[in-house]
Amino acid sequence: MDAEARKMVGNLRLVLLGPPGSGKGTQAERLAKTFQVSWISTGEMLRQAVVADGELGQRIAGILRSGNLVDDATMAEVVSERLTQPDVEAGFILDGFPRTISQADTLSRILREAGETLTCVLSIDVPEKELVKRILGRNRADDREIVIQNRLAVYREKTEPLIEYYKGFGLLQSINGDQPMDAVTEEMTAKLAVAV
Ligand code: ADP
Image (tube, rainbow, N blue to C red; front, top):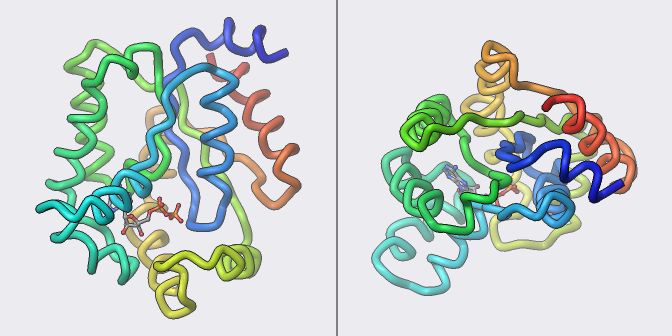
């Protein structure tokens, strides 16, 4: 099944959307393995920048702790640089980008300039109560309860509009994220096979 799925999608260029706690990261990692493409997590890239403690890391550390978004101009720089690295030619799964309409426009521009398009956008749906339960179990520095409420609010305000945005391009597929992890992976793989 894996080899077959891989053949069907060719060079997968996928965006994963979903609120914090939706399981995006876990699913992105699994799909990247199955489809042999690069997993690009902007949250992970930014957390690493904070650990490295350079100019970028120092500038964004407080923003990450608060659960707010890093500004669009900085994100455009970070992602443009990542998407021009050679491994990305074989395809990618974007986890955590875009998070705003402006970022989605940036991504469209980068792809257009490279003569490429997105294969598909998968949006993972999970009820809010379940999200809070999951995030509290994670115990990360930006996962304290007041910060969680802020991150969920930021998601609803800034990122959720991307669902309609990508629907408008006929790229969006919804995934039920309120089921066991393996079932979510299966639903995603099945929908990807249909999307291409
Ligand atoms: P989660 O998947 O739990 O929402 P991430 O690991 O994707 O968390 O992101 C962690 C934090 O990194 C976000 O709360 C935000 O501050 C920052 N971040 C990640 N991606 C972006 C982005 N595309 N634009 C702005 N900020 C981002």
